[in-house]
Image (cartoon, rainbow, N blue to C red; front, side):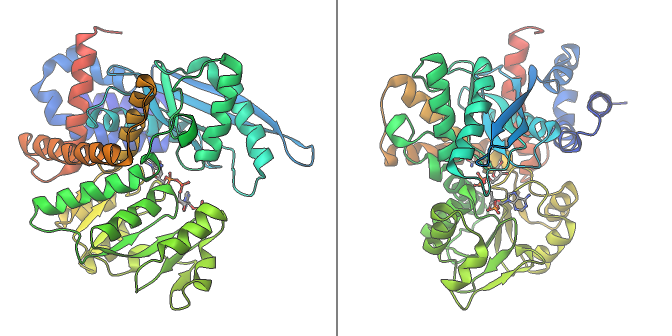
Length: 443
Ligand code: NDP
């Protein structure tokens, strides 16, 4: 049995039922097969065993009281996966589907993504099965305060710096930051995604979506093409999707779809982003309201955006939202590139099919790393007690995304998988962390 198969079998046996974590571990470890073969020192130092076991996983009770006076209990999580190259860093997901396996898959992915940014940040992730949807501001505040009343013990500007993710936006970060400050008395950059008036960074809101499009453009450029004039299918209508659509327009493309958890829209004339921002960012509403802004558009609750003819597909909602049938539909419609804005949105079978069909494919850990990279830039600004301009941050983000593409492409080529960024991103992200772990001894 190969070293990778041995470790993978052990991960599955030791973490029963954590299917998303198994899926992420399998994808990463299988890509590392040629690297561990070339470097026997990794096996000698139990590197993969240590890498797949989080430094610690914290689970806690989050009690809160709703507007009717009824108490509720949610479960909070923080998985501190690996801090070989810097403090733990990764978002907090608030969604009813959240469980330990999902947080561990996200935390594990985060190690390699953060490494790829070239910035000194380790990997972690957290969240809760709390659903902020339909809750009043007071209820969300109650939850956030209760959540942070426990979480504050484990985080700090040089220890672990959480951020937003699904369900955790500026409002939630604000409530959590206020609670952290109240309990500890510290005004420090312990969370990122903060409001601009209290330590947030310009361009952080836009960063993941913009970064995704910068990387997609770089990938197309390397193959003699560009986004200009391309039709783009986007899923999701949250933070990542909205700013991916905005930047895609800026580079001359035409985004024609978006989706939320109840349905999706197709607007053949191009998405009216102002309308989507009004519905999602201002009113926290549903995409079913879009037709009122654009009568010629279509709204559907069955099927998926991937049925629509497009040149480029950007899945930006959630994990496993693009399956093999979707991939077949995309290929049939002659898609040329798929870049993941969400974390692990493409199932392994779909990824394999797309790559085999000659579609350029950028995995999330490379393509959506712009968010965490800009979070790290927010940490730098907080440490310096300075604010950089939008243009400064955006230029750094662009440079980082181009760098990620080049690193991943070079690593893929070095190990005989030219143009396969799944291999490239995993190998490049892994190598830096692995070497830091080797240098620090068996800890
Ligand atoms: P948001 O909560 O802002 O938006 C998520 C969007 O996806 C919403 O439109 C939501 O629909 C939809 N969605 C969420 N869950 C499901 C589901 N189970 N089925 C169908 N649709 C769903 O989150 P973000 O945009 O921040 O995050 C999207 C993805 O990008 C996630 O995978 C996240 O981990 C990843 N990511 C985010 C980063 C960031 O900086 N924000 C950084 C890197 C990765 P609805 O409107 O109905 O809730």
